[in-house]
Amino acid sequence: MRARISPHLFSGTVRIPASKSHTIRQLLIASLAGGVSEIIAPLDSLDTRSCADACRAFGAVITEHRAPDAQCPNPPDNDGARLVSYTVQGNNGFGVRRRFSRSIDVGNSGTTLYLALAAAGLGNEPFEFTGDEQIQRRSAAPLLEALCGLGIRAESVNSNSNGCAPIIVQGPWKGGKATLPCPTSQYLSAILLAAPLAPDGVVTEIAVPLLNERPYVEMTLSYLDAQGIPWEAEPNFSRFVIPGGASWKPFSRSVPAAVPGDFSSAAFPACAAAISGGPVTILGLDPNDLQGDKFFLEMLDGMGCTVQWEQIPETAEYRLTVSRSGPLHGGSFDLNATPDLLPAAAVTAAFAEGDTALVNVAHARIKETDRITVMAAELAKLGVRCTELPDGLIVHGDGRTTGMAAVSGGLINGHGDHRIVMAFAAAALSAQAPIVIEGAESAAVTYPGFLELLQAEYL
View 1 (cartoon, rainbow, N blue to C red):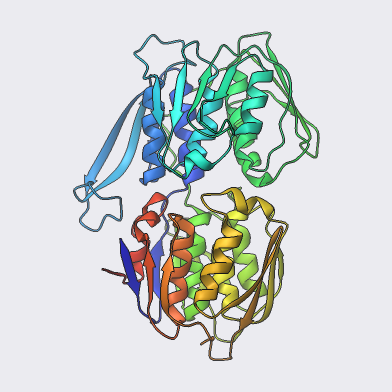
View 2: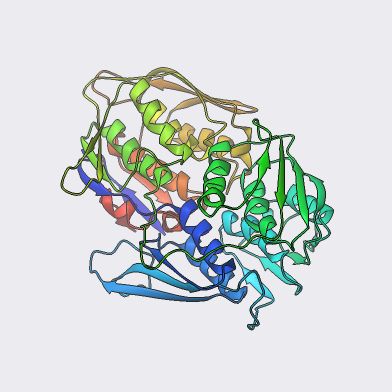
C-alpha cells in the first residue's frame, strides 16, 4: 500500500495509544499467572495481536472486550470496534492442563518472539516459533544459547542455522549459570519474566557482558517488584540471580489500571510538531513512567522546541504540548538506551541547522531493518546528506529559520518497518513536495491511525 502525505501544518490534540512494551509484558504475565486478569485499555495493533495469539497457544484463555467506535484507529477488520480490555485466564506457569498449540506464528513482533521463547522453556511440550520474512532474518542466537545453558532445548531449525526462526523450544527449566550478551534488552527481559516460575530450588544465574536499552529491563523489573518476586543484580546489571519457586499473580480485576501510553509512539506526533511547528498537545502519557523513549522530548528541547507538561486538575491526567517558533538546531545524542528513536530523530535532524550525530546505537541495525543504513539511503532520496557510522548516523541538516529545509518530496520505501514509515510521514509535513511511502500499512504494527492523523491519501 502506498500513502501520500502533502506538506501542511500539523497541530491539535492527539491521544497516544497504549504502550506496546507494557501491553505485551502484561499479556505474557497474565497468561503465565494463575487465575483471571483484566488488562485495561491495551494497545490493539498487529504486534499485540500476535502476542495474544502466542499466549493462547500457551493455553491461556483470552477474551477481547470491544465497544463501538467509528473513529477507532485500529487495524483493519475491527468493524469500528475499539478494544476496551482483555480478560485473561492464565495457565499457572503451564500447570493448568489445557490444549496447547505446538506452532506459534509471531508475525512481525520481535518482542513477542523473544519474550515467548523463554516462557516456552517453562513447559514440557515442544513449541515451534515462526514469523514473517523479517522475523526469519532476526537472530535470537544469544538467547537460544543461554536457554540451552539452563537445560532447555532451544534450537533454530532455520536452513541457515543462524539463530533465526523457525525455532523449537522445549523445557523443563533446569536452571544453572549462563552468559547472555544483550544487543537487545528483550533477551534479558525474557529470562527475567520466565525464570521466577522455575521449580522451587532452581536458581537461574545470568552473566550479562553487554546490555543495551537498559530502561526496558528496568520496566520488566518493575513488574517483578510490584508482585514481590525476588531477584538480585549487580548495580550495573552485569549479573542477575533469580530463584525459582515464585508465581505470577493475576492483575487485579477489582482495582484495574490502564496500560500506560506509549512514548515510542508519541515520538512521531512530537516529531511532526517539531518539523511543522505545531503546537501539538499529546494526551495519555505519564512523565513518571519508566519508558526510555521519553528521552525524545529532551532531544526536542535541546534542538529548540518548547516542551511543556501540565497536569489536568479535574482528571489528574498529564497533558504534553510540543511546539516550535524558531529554528531547529543540530546536536549530538546517545541513543544506546533508546534505539527505536533513531528514525524519528533522523528526520527531525534533516530540518535542523547544522549536523546532528545519533551515536552509540549500533543495535539499531538489528531491528526490523538495518535502520542506520535504511535511514541514510531514504533520506538521500529527499536530498538530505548523511554520514553513516558503524554505530550511528550523522545527519547534515540544512534548516532555515522558516523551518523549510532543503528536503524534497518523492517516493520512499518503508522497508516493511513501521518506524521508518511513520518517520517519513512526519517529514512530509515540511518537505518541498508530497512524500509517497511504499509499504505504508506497516504503521499498523504499533500505531494504527497515525497516517490518518497526518491526512494521508492512500494510492
